[in-house]
Image (cartoon, rainbow, N blue to C red; front, side, top):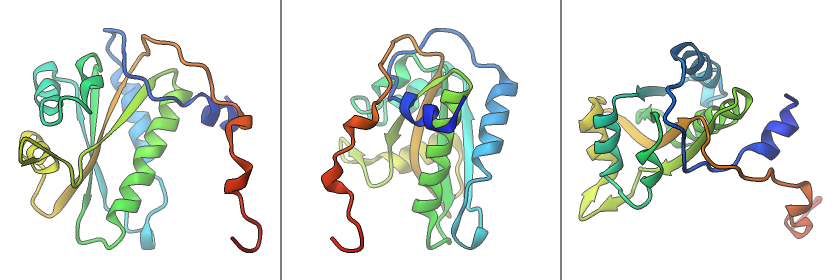
Length: 172
């Protein structure tokens, strides 16, 4: 698939088929994603791939409204990065975006759910997720990504959706 087509076809998928994603496919997606650029090529990002339904449900419950898509997602990828890196948020965002674009190329759908600096019922969502999946203290959780075979159809984006007024040449 052409890269431009991947960008147009990437949509937030919130309903997934109850079909497991092959381990080899998941492995390829995350390996390619971890080749994403990072500040000073430090590569501070690490991923936790969760396929256990009970654990996915517990992650969903850390932010039930925003993470509702995890109800049917057969895979939840927790995106974390070493907080010693001054660019950990940017680096983790790039890896997460690569995962979503690669998912499209593999015929999968995905949805990003933000965890960092979010709370639910007075509890820090990222800290709850860290505990659930055993992430070390010096790492921060940026987001979770639900991944699987789509059980909904969304039309691809069109280039005409871009607002030309948001593109500035030379000066604002």
